[in-house]
Length: 189
Image (cartoon, rainbow, N blue to C red):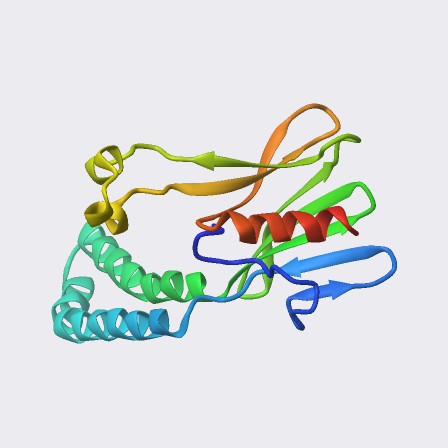
């Protein structure tokens, strides 16, 4: 999720880096404000859809048999759930908490933890960064000045190596320097 939800790259970023004697907590930034405009447009379209189909659906629920009524309720539930799903993207937060040689990754939506993982870091070289490029495009294969902006550059992944030898993806980003700064923050605490 590091391509949308970015971690801080400096220890001085207030509100997103919480540091005390024993622990370090890093929180992701929210989505850019332009995405809020997209969300409002999508929710407005859903509202117009609801007002357009409300009368026939309510009639189907009241006059139909059990299967028609359940279909109507399912459609109303979907239309009600979809804006919550969209807003969930805006209130998603990922946290990395490092205490000694232990790292905890927490995923929250609307401030409620829905997934958490705990790892114990390997003693030597627990953090590494690698490049991921799924498929180079024609502009990258030709590699001339005119096509430079169209090249697929891929992204970079920050891995942690656990004590039991597993390699876990901690974050990913399109800029390697940002992951190196994040790696430096985690290594120096």
